[in-house]
Image 1 (cartoon, rainbow, N blue to C red):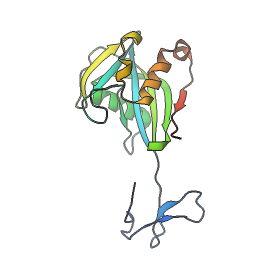
Image 2: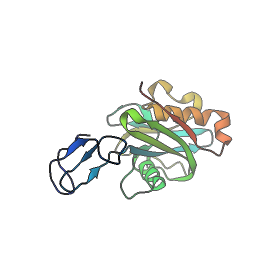
Image 3: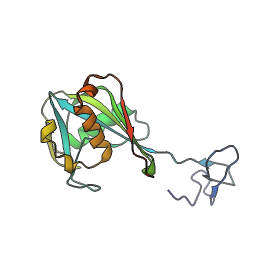
Length: 179
């Protein structure tokens, strides 16, 4: 992100070394505000019904017409569980109960962290939302693996269908580092 003006006082800001900071930052010489840049949090659910998972076909870019789990950006003032529930409702009109945090996936090169929650569908009354053109339940063998929208989603699905991951009570960690 490129910043030109301080959102605290409106003065022109600079980018560089700041005393007491380990990384270069945007800062304001006038009011001494440091403007931190932090990763975006993406939260969502891995909704399950028996041996099937609920996937959404994206109706928007990026990755339009590819399949994903219901997920999106966490809003300010929202806890991660509420954000995951909201995204699942918005994208799949699905009512779920969160079981536990399932996977954490870091994408440092684009400043994103995915938090995906294992969730149980309360019923089969799901449908497309504004950002989805199709919503379906898939078994492992039915998933269009070559049409999965994002690496974090593919990682989460692969770990879910790995028999040892389904019974493990700890979150699965993964990530991609651009070299």
